[in-house]
Amino acid sequence: MKRRLATFGIALTLVASASMAEDGPHDAAIEARQAMFQLYGYHFGILSDMAKEKRDYDAALAAEAADNLDAVTRLGQGSFWPQGSDSETDGNARNRALPAIWSDYPDIEEKAAALKEASEALVSAAGTDLDALQGAIGPVGNACKGCHDDYRAERK
Amino acid sequence: MSGSPSATGTRTIRIWDVWIRLFHWSLVLAIAFLVYSGRTGELFTEWHRRVGELVLVLVVFRLLWGVFGSSNARLASLIVDPRAALAHLRDLAARRVHRETRHNAAGGWAVLALLVLLGVQAVTGLFIADEDEIVEGALYGAFGSDTSDWLHHVHHVNADLLQVLVVVHIVMIAVYLLHARLNLVTPMVTGRARVTAERAPDEPSWRPVGVGAVCAAVALAGVGRLCGWF
Image (cartoon, rainbow over all chains, first blue to last red; front, side):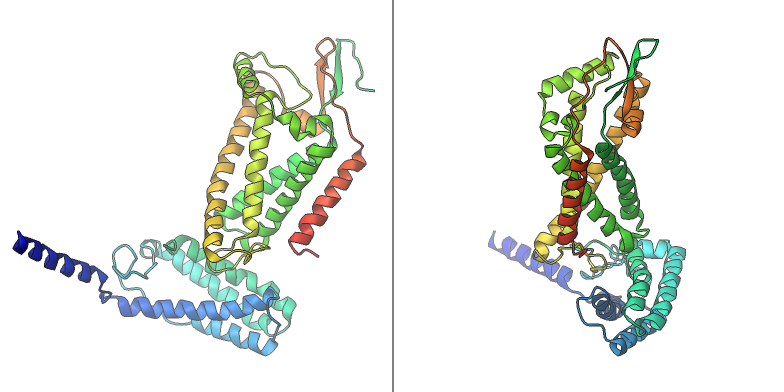
């Protein structure tokens, strides 16, 4: 009886630690693309707070944030989205990329193009004045949301 | 002077005052846009919140008008014995319903349910934002993130409930029209209906239009201040 319990206990520990391990094959790509989204979020946050008048408008800072955001839209993402790195196949607990990204790729391309277009308009507007920023930031937010609504898993 | 008699023994009576009618159809347009923008994301960041705040104005107005308005607008008049509501639905099935100058027994409860759900939707909207905080309600941040997440969830579930109730409402209006031959739509547009002289129900007691204007102004000012319009 004691031996069986011990064997069972060891087996349980092995299984538990295997499921806790995060070194899946796609972790590097997943973490890199999440870092990319953090950059988007950081710069968008600065611009959004200015647009909502939660912080003082600063033309130079706004221009830089918009430039940076635009730079991120030009990152080549070929290696960020390997097959099998979706949230249902891959075991990475922080991964929220839905399988639809891979099956609906034409829609992804359209939405990426919309983001690029909106971001370019924001670059010219952000450093001009607050009105221009407020006018140009909407489409960028829409573009972000457009993808997130369909392709990002709900927060757990 | 309530109606002009005609040779065939029918007359026209007034049923719905201008404020009720304005309220109703503004709500139709607002809800249509909110459902559309909420589901498709079109114009969402620009307009979903603003039109939602307008719905809050409409609900507050309706509550005020339900206290100070015409007799058939009074909220108290909507609360009737549920058995009367069921009896009315049986009459409807049997095509035994007639023109009334107030919400019928079942319709009164429907109005209350819609007002409650609309109120919940508009109020939860004040306190929430999407995950990326791209669109924020006017009072977002008043609660901690756990409460805010829960209110966000309520807003989504309640949206589905509302849509179901709206569909039920439209279907029922169609049932009155097609099954019982009672047109409830035209009176909500024109405010008037034809009734046979013998069966003519009493007209509601009206309030001056100005009282409605004051209610509207109070609603606009109150919600506007709350939402930071000024």
